[in-house]
Length: 315
Ligand code: NAP
Image (spheres, helix red, strand yellow):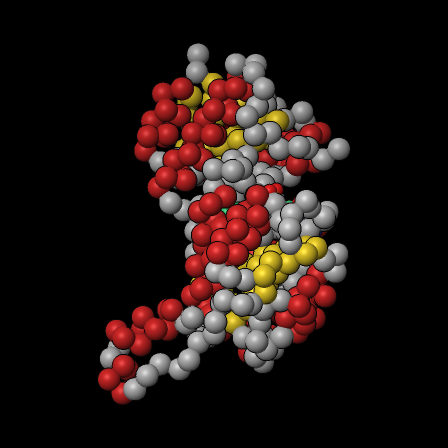
């Protein structure tokens, strides 16, 4: 008999077909009444396929599924999963690291280039015919500037590599110093003071919630830019709005927000902000690899083999 899996979101066609072939898939996105679907099948569900932009995997949900064995997250970040509850109930957790690193780092770079070189504005300038009335206002150079990266993990390193190719100096802060040729800061405020582009590439969750406050943004200064591809929760969005409104910083390039898909109305109207709808990993190639890794982790688990990308639980 096929095992039952509760899926929050569909995979791409090819991977979805594999999932459907191998499991009895409860498709939450198709359900008229998701709560009843879960309740009706609670005893059968052995796996959850979760994603960040879903309602999350809470202690309540985990506790309601007595035969749940594994949560396979479609994504590298897992701040939507209650890891303590997973550990308490002996549920394994996997994610999809590495396969999305390059695409997400690309998004950090395009946000940095876009906001500094006013690319969105430039496109609009041509489209609405303003070019006929004169030249566009000047933008800001990337070359020769300092890029400060918060979280030098896999994506942070890939950002550093790309930013170096644009002739920038790289500095970083992380929980621990790395064996890399970039200058390490153990003080985020000091690093913000010393860089022109502050790029957030750390994990989300309790530890990094509201790491970026008005005080940090003030240190980044009126010529500095904030780029966020990590999680919306890392930035105090109210403080960011104030900093943008007062021009305490020059601008921001944002792929993630505190309450997605809601973006503050005021931010939408600001022309010193480039907005992107959480698309770090959103390419056909990468989403396909992420889906395959989810399938491989599930197969490994149910075959009694080592998991390909286990998430380390709390203790
Ligand atoms: P990773 O290799 O695990 O790196 C996470 C980094 O965060 C590590 O360098 C870690 O520091 C750092 N970190 C954790 N807590 C910190 C803190 N309190 N202060 C400073 N740094 C801290 O993960 P990754 O693959 O690079 O992914 C990073 C994050 O990017 C994910 O967790 C996810 O939230 C986000 N992401 C977003 C998108 C998107 O679509 N925008 C796509 C993929 C991923 P240490 O190395 O010192 O432990």
